[in-house]
Length: 301
Image (cartoon, rainbow, N blue to C red; front, side, top):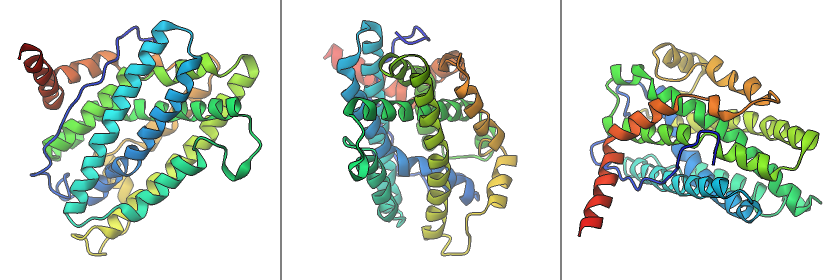
């Protein structure tokens, strides 16, 4: 069991995107598309999570951790599917993302795939450990982002689309809920002592700049190809920071501070965010409540 001592189970949610506008934060295309980068990265990225963890599962000796990993995999698979549906919705609104997502596919399926890229002579066990360290590092950021979106009142004040907010907050709450699992799995399978810690540092050293680059590139792509903007706007740091000041995006400090916390030898993700707040949202999320109701109706039939 993870450090949170909480059972992790997937929720088979669904969302109706029919009435969600392209700019789901009204009059805020920069904030809309910076957040929309999630939809570009997560369908393939979270399938990759599941694949890496499935590869590591036979190495797990602790029954509680094994149960958590299976629950984590179920949640991440659902996240992947639901964010892929958003890409379909963007395409229906004439914002085609395939030219960008092919690079995301290449990153996760080729560069970080089953075999080391370019024939690098890395032993299979070591390659698995490195990829687990990257999953743990990415999960550090998703926990921080998940906790942020649960308290991002600026999105409510801006009259953001309710369905998109529920997707983001349901997903964010589950990221906080399973915040410790990837880290615990890495610690379990990542060897011992200094080499294990050094690999954890290496995972973050690769992950942090990779995520920053992909996010800026993704936001720029979405803004540049937005049919409603028709080339009148470009992504800029000034525009991004303006959205941050409105409370529509997390601050750079919030994101950057996650890195030194993670690098402490004594670090554990159970300290990230509020599990209570996450569970409270999951108890009231329209999509999560509908999923629970559907399970209940199926059981009664």
